[in-house]
Image (cartoon, rainbow, N blue to C red; front, side, top):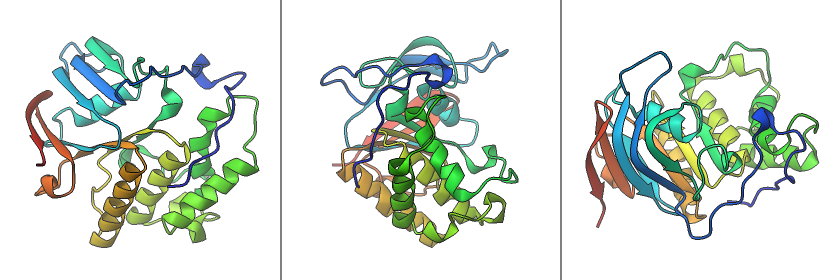
Length: 248
């Protein structure tokens, strides 16, 4: 994949979070004894989970709905506080490397009736590099165009997101994650309710990304044989890691 242009540290970053340099030789993702609960809940949705993800690895979190996969990804993305344990992204806690981490939510979490074009939605993936005072520049729009062309959605850029099919919606969300230029991508159920062609296109794209040294963590519940696609499979049930499978 083409290297993406990044801006200097924003003068007024979103949420007051400034970029932090990663630790040399640190793993893209390291989780130790992690426990996470949602606000106003005393019951952990994730309990005592530990694993690492290496550079260029395609890792699957597999388990039924409600197993804790989405909770784990949101904690790594810095969207949920942790109860115990630790998360390190390139050696620093979530938030410090937020521009190096891209989170792709489930399609159901997006309001697809919102009056915005496809181009604007994808462009929002660049905002982490801009902060409050900068408008997207030509380099940012060029990045959107290149990614849209790679995903076969460049003809949709000026359409409203309310006009999209399910497969198109998923491609748009993937594009928004990619334009951020992150090294660690967290994808929550990207294959859910997709046709075979879109699914195969995403799998091919994921292979390109890992070949370019990107690390992908993919939560999924609908793969019959995930070992045929992923480098490593971690199975989760009731918020706890159960089994880890590594391909020979």
